[in-house]
Image 1 (cartoon, rainbow, N blue to C red):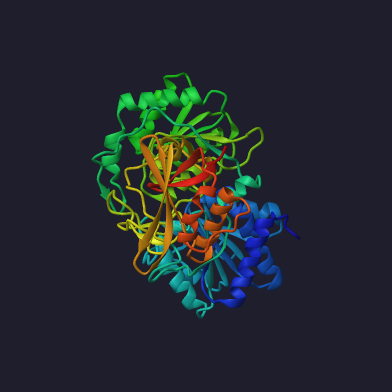
Image 2 (cartoon, rainbow, N blue to C red; image 1 turned 90 degrees about the horizontal axis):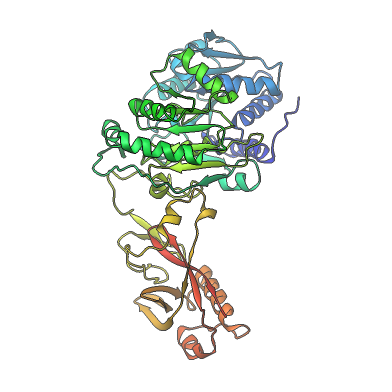
Length: 527
């Protein structure tokens, strides 16, 4: 049987073939939430068994919902698949199935019962720690020994990083060694495979001032104590109700169990059906609530720390973030609950009361490759907007092209930038130009550059034009010149440029946009 795969799903499987033909490591497949990792896992498993009939595959994850979801995805695509489940939560222990979907909590002590295994696929791979000596690490180590060191392990995730350890495939004692395939979330949205997420600035904002940090994340009990305030909760809920008119399924992420219940109660006061799911919710009750929510019989669900991964409710068209986090992965996973496609759904509205978009930026440009700092402060690096060279955070000028970084306090349109969920939503600000000055800029050991300073009322914005550099900085300088000088040949030196300034068109306005905590000139408008 041939599975019907989307082009990027087919590409992911081909990338795994290419990887294993050249490497013996444990690769990662990175696919955004809602792009069909379950079908990709099913396709790869089916083809592995078609190629080698006695291949044994183990698919591991952490919650029963995902176990069942992946199992059913395989059976829909391949009804006669020799598959079984090993999960205490699902009351099944099909330990000898050729394709075994298992919960790590149930199976981690039973490697010797599993015995022969060729391939282990780990779904939601970011939920196991790098260098972890716990369940995944000990189970896979023992299983690999049983199988003479020939075990192959593949991780699937939408977020290949963790708050405490950075990228999953980097660093000492990591389980995963490489990223074999990755598809960007913005590409999936633009190609119509995912639903757009739309931000709306909220009037209510949670105050986390004074909340301590431990392990790079807000201390849970202190966070809940800071944000679980009745007047704030009621103000936020009033905004959710206002913006949610005409939207069908509202999912709210809260900062703790008590907070989730208080938010639920405030929603009920508006006459709207609402329930809460937490880690304390009994299994049958939780299943009933989520089934009603997915079916559209229940409009509003609040939760605390349980629906951030593996929860599939395509109809969700409003997400409210009442859970501040310093974790890039958690932020992306929460927003990702709204990106699935559904009939009658055009987009998903995201109301961020927690300041997460301002804290981390658009979900398609987040940096999960570094550990979160223990406290707030300037990042240890910054990237030059002129030549993309990485500089230390303390640098005032770029070490490569001599671009002078503006003072950190100078920001343009912070509200628009902080509210953007996708990089395409960041709005640059147009500023009228009242004056321009040009100057040669020198730095020992580096080629000279032309510093152009635009006066925009009381504000000043500068850019550096690198005629004497090579590569990208030179190409950018040539483009800058041609927009101002037409067919006049671009000069080779800064001195030559200074002699020709009277022949340049002068912009009447420039477009300035935030670039991290700095700014960059994005465009110029001429008469």
